[in-house]
Amino acid sequence: MKKTQGVSLITLVITIVVIIILAGISFYNGILKNVAETGNTMDYNEIFEVSEAVNQRALLHRLNANSYQLIGTTGDFYVDIIIYSGDTEIKKTELYSSSNGWYQITENDSPYLNLEKVRKTYLVNYNTGEVVSPEAITYENKKYFTASSLRNAMAGNEVVTANQYDDVKGVNRPYVVNGMLPVKMVSGSWVVTTVDDPDWYDYAASSSSNGNAWANIMLLDEVELEGVSNAQIRNASADALDGKVVTKEGSMFVWIPRYSRGEIDGEMRIVYSKLTDDYFPDETEDNVLDAFEENGIKFTGIWVSKYDASYFEK
Image (cartoon, rainbow, N blue to C red; front, side, top):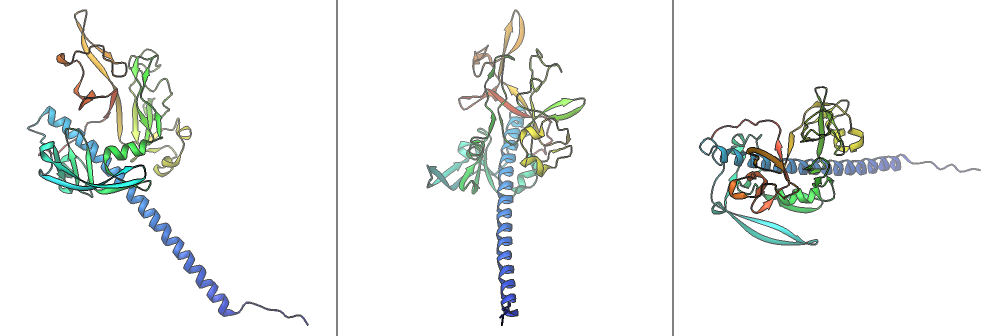
């Protein structure tokens, strides 16, 4: 006689319960991972937005100190930070003092910096543009405390085009990293292009079919393209986005290549620099804008907000 052996009801119930528990653990871990990644992205965006706002406020302060005072609380601020020697963490305490230009800003200062309410407290320096987060921001399993160190870490090998001199156009090329979308105006609409597009920029209007063209980029904060959502844009390749029409603009910036100004044949002229070599190098005559130099460091160009920002006066 053949003996048929089936699965008992108790065994079946136990198996189902175990599957449900394992599925629940996997789902829970997935939620935690997504929450952590979302939190990290919010941290990245916020510290970079604060950095941009600080630089904008510093510029307005230089133009009109009475109307645009420096925002924040003064004092001596101690922050426990971590620096790395290879993969080894080194803990140290740094002093950020107002005697060296540091201010503390909180969510209450947000309106005066034209920011939505910030979630954290930051230390900012209007002289250097640096922003410090007393709470560590994690990126690729390492902890960062300053906007500059985080920006450098995220740029890493993700540079789309290194800034260098364009021999054909006679101007310093824009410095572009991942997260920036090169765009150009076509028939009244912004269209995504590539850094190699000859019509993306031409400050002398010597070769561009559209005449004088400035290099423009959009950030990925709110940008949407025709048939492409913001979430899809963040995972798409540059080639896949080339030629897409912008339906919702992100934060927009224009590249200002380094230049100097001076008199040629009795007429004031502007001449673009070759990297950091200026045609009119005499700094005593203020031939080079202050924006192209900071603390002894010369910039080959700067990204500037495309549209004017409105500020609360304080």
